Amino acid sequence: MPITERLDRLRTAATGLINVTVDSHTGGLPVDYCRGAGIDVVVRGVRGVPDLDQEMPLARMNHELTGIETLFIAADPDLAHISSTLVTAMSQQDRAPERGSERASSRRGSYS
Image 1 (tube, rainbow, N blue to C red):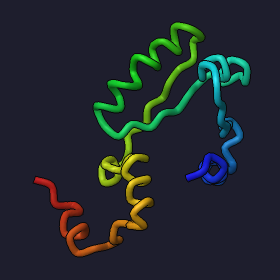
Image 2: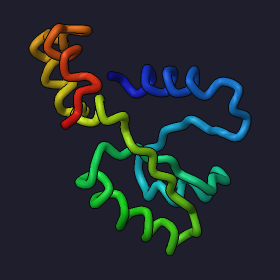
Image 3: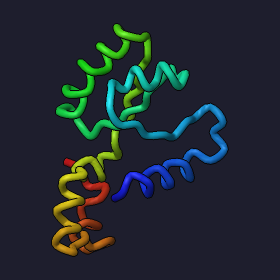
Image 4: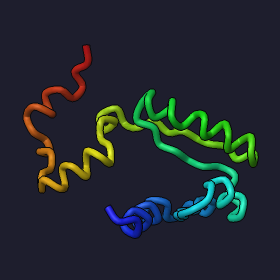
């Protein structure tokens, strides 16, 4: 998905949240961008432990360098398996998961 479309979707989701900035940057450290833009907190989504293992050292270093805090939000367990790599691969094959399929419906809410 192009960055402009991602930003548009995020801005729509953040409508009415006066203390939320949706933006993108390229080049340089994110903490330098945040410092210049007056951003104190970065929100990051994590799907599971591997994501958290990757993000934690970055969050600690960002805090050490500038005092910026990182807030982690866990993904919905039903969606945690989805990655940008998976979405790209499915898109290249012009495929999409079946919504509400019998197989998916039978697994919902039945945890052992």
